[in-house]
Structure formats: C-alpha cells, structure tokens
Length: 364
Image (cartoon, rainbow, N blue to C red):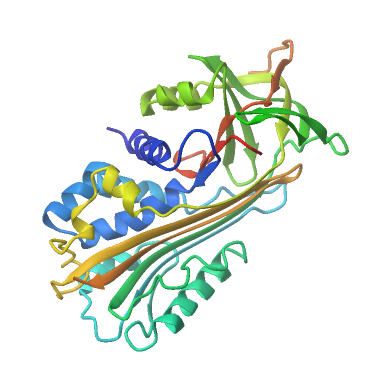
C-alpha cells in the first residue's frame, strides 16, 4: 500500500474511534503518527508488530512525515509558518540506546532533554508544557494536566506542531454574517464566510469536495456529505477518500463556510487499545530500542489539537505525548456550496498528502 493511502487509512481509523458522531472532534494525524512512529523505532516483538499494523510500513510513513515538515517556498503571499518539534524528555539515569538517538536526530526539530521525573514530577511536567507552549505559539499551554507525570515516569516522547497559512483566495471582506447551521441539537446561527472563486471541486459518491489552497502548498479540504454525516463517514474508506482528494477539478464555486475555532483534547490510550495497540501499555512491552531497561512501558498517550479558520487563513497547533514509566480554465456556471450542516475538514500537505488536521464539525 502506498504511503499516502496508508496515512489516510491511519487517519480515518483514529477519526472513527475518537469520540462520537454527534459532537466535534479535531486531532492531528501528523502529530500522532510522528509520536507513534518514533515509538515504533524503539519497539521490538509484539510491541512493534501492533504499531506497524496500525501505521502500515513504518519506514514509508516516517518518510512521508519528514517530507511534510517542509512547506513550498512562497513569493506572492504572506510567508506561511510551520514549526515541528520531536523531543525525548528523559530521566538522567535512564540508559538510552545510541541507535534510537541517531534515528531521532534525523527527525525535524529533534532534541533530547533532561527532566527531573523521579525527584520532582511537577517540575518535569512544567518543563514539557513550557516547551510545547513555545512550539505551538501559546495555543497549547498545558498538554500534560496535573497528575499526568508520576515519580516512576522516566521518559516522555513529545511531538508538537504549529501551522499558520493564508488563503490563496481570501474570503470576501465584510461579507461574513450569521447564517443557519443545522446541528443534531437543532438549527442555530453561526458566523459564516463567503467566497466566490475558482477552486478545486468534485461531487461524487455522496460527497461535495471543495479544495481551498493556502500558502506554502497547504490545502484545506471541505467534505460535505449529501445527507447525514454519520452515515456517510461510516462508509468512507482510505481508497474512496484518496479518490475524492485527488479527483477535484477547477470549478467556479460560491462557498459559504462557517468560521471555526476548535480546541479538543483527546486521550488516546483507550483509542489505541481499541485499534489493536495494547502490548506497549503492558508490562510485556519491549521498548529495548530506546533503553536497555526492560521495565519500560508506555503509561499514557495524550493529544490536543487547536484549529482556527477565518477570512484570512487558518492557524493550528497540535501536540502528542507518550509518557513512559518503568514497568485548464474552462468557462462554467458557478457551483453553490453552502456548508450549513455537519461536515469533515482536512488540512493537509499537498505534495506528500500528510494530514496535519482532521476535524468533524458538528457544532461550529
């Protein structure tokens, strides 16, 4: 399976398992896959096999993630910003394997840092949160909540991501106004932006797809189902989604799209267990690629994503922490796309297909 389709399959698997269809969800497949791919590099035996079953070919997935850490040069628009950090926070007395450190060094924004996990867990938590806060430009000030670091915590793998880019075609200034949005709990008015532009569009297999280009070779993809979102997304697989994403063509579109501000925390331990990743959370975990200490296991996986869309562009941040303890220009008629009911939203790297953010918008 190609790396892009494997990444989409991974993204959809998490999307289906995180939260119910009646509420908003938002997470970063890019960030979660980065943290899990690093864990897979440290794993052996059943621990590695389960991660590979979820991620697909770990080497190919890693190459895709690394390529998506670079944006295309921009000459005509405000320069986009992409900051990525991959950090191993470790207790000073934990023996680390040179092979893992060498592999980590090849990742974007890689570093190894010391934290006083065993002597002052709250101070360690503060150091990690401050670092994530800096990488995410203040959007995620507290990834690790109080009590998430224990005296027997000895390492934490953290991926943090910040992305900001302006639309190539900005929404009409002054046209934003309240409009109806039909939610499961009833119809309500939300601030809605308007765009009349030639952009990527496709209507197929029960979906309308609108592709909005942004600076740096980033795309926002709106997936509006013809009917009920829950029914449509249950039938959406990686092959179908890949065809929808690559099958858009230039079309004049009159788009009405709600402004968005999402901030969603997603504890992932139970999600990953549901998806078959179980051994790394148990005392049978084999993370000997990271450390010779055979007692090492993953105690939790925490994730948070923030995503904001407005008339100028979008800004998003995400962070994932694995805590470890011992044990052509044709003239056409415009298509009107009114996003007035639940929909899916992807922010992705156009060249590699890596999905920075995947959101279900039920209540904008």
